[in-house]
Length: 615
Image (cartoon, rainbow, N blue to C red; front, side, top):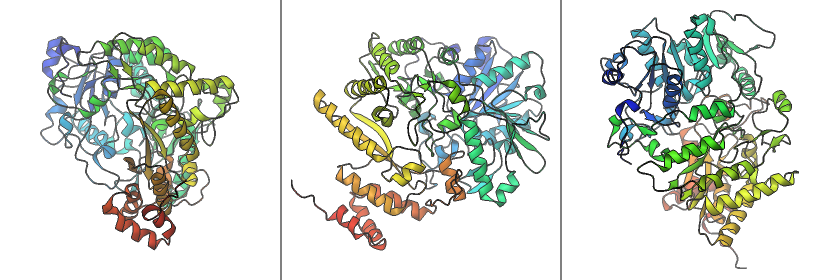
């Protein structure tokens, strides 16, 4: 979509991005300057807008430099001057390397967070590149880094693109502090203390911060000392052991401080803030976003904005704990849900947008149907360190009631101007099918399932079984494929009863930990028998701070230290991925040769010569 929706907004409705825009506001100095690897879209789905609007609400003068040119005379880094308080740097809403490269390390042709999808508007590792430039130009001004890229690299981590273990991103970026996770609470606390005249050293106890120090100050008995970076370089099992501690602390209500030694310093990671309250998350979403790209992008398409411009995020956090996913490591497993009033306020705002035709593209979150869910007895949650509340089975202490979410859907659909509200986020069907002891949970899950399928699917419902092998599913913390088969029956039944002709689109991954080529061949047979020609597929890409990545790098499961096979070479990864496309003629010969090599002519016959008997 071209950005022609600016309509009655004034240039000063956006945060300033140039000296000219500072002059429009009559400002000669900014308090904070934010450098972002993404285009500036003033929308609550874009972190730069969220953080900057949060600071603006504190009375600060804030500017944004989006996608600065790092290859010229660096004028973009100088144009807004030197801030009174500090610089902020974020690589963007996605990890920059995932954004730039495929799983086979090929350059992507498009960048969804850039005007007209240009792929050359951000460097590799912008958190490091931007930070080094800022520190060179303004060595005495404090610098904070954050966002998904920095957050997942706060400690020693395996980098798939360089194929080696790297130190904390703090070392190369030279940033003063790293804010991990969702940043509103820590950055506001930093501002509060700086406004009180506190020094940088007096900020080191703020939750959710990581920093480099020559010593571990004020050590406490429950602090966790991780294996040093040098020890991890020599012994992969020690790095695997570190990950177990890091993941467990990331999923605690009351976590401990962690530190990791390097040659001449320590990286110290403070425990996170408690989960945001409804009041706190409402305050973030209720800020005065224009919900539009900056006017300088007029007539340019920003694909990521097109996807979310008419969507509403109703909660943060995910307690699924999927081993390949970074959401729980970044947002946490505890759900922070918005109030119905805040959600409806945003829906009404969307309904008045000039380009809105009455269809909300998504009413969801990291997982669409976790809204309002938490532990029934929070004292039990306070003692829990499990990364998932629903794997290997749903926790008996989880309040998995879908009633509040149903009420949200029905209230949204009553808003004038709303013709349909769709759910585009992923749905956890195991939450819908689980045999709860509480009959009310089961009843609400059935009601929700019918409501979802009959009223909130835009022709195709995407779900993510990820694989068919129980061995793989157990390691990646996903439910048995039997749950998908059950859900498909329910989906087909409701479609028939409602007179609908909708599709269920499953999402699968290849090269996951423990997945063999034979597992992929068996997946292909199951897909064929179910009449699926798979299209939503992906080859596993190792990203920092996930269980699957640690298994890929170390070869061991961090929780058991047992060896786990994972496909590594480009050739092996392509061999696995080809089975998704068994129906494509260009893959038939290669797949046939592979199955003969594997001595699995039984699978070969099922894929290409097997015919079902007529009943």
